[in-house]
Length: 104
Image 1 (tube, rainbow, N blue to C red):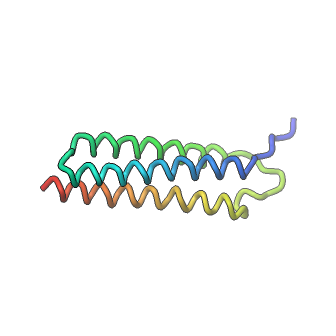
Image 2: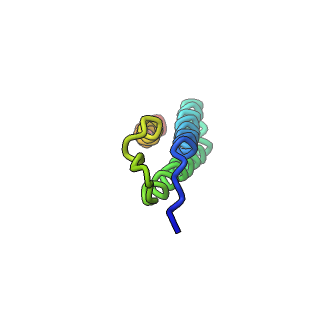
């Protein structure tokens, strides 16, 4: 049986969705930390990590599939989605540090 073709557009949009959710949650966490709501900030950061993980799982799952057209590494939309995912990871890390500074 031939491998199922990967729908790169659908995969890309799912990754971008979770990356965007992760970024928004991280920024919401910083807003809460600025208000002194550290418990809420910690909860939001945890949710941001969960959203990031969902995006990363989708990326990992689909990169391991065979793509008969050999498009996985050349699709611009997928590259854009992966960029969002990596920037979400960076933003979460930086915001975690900023929250720690607010706690001090």
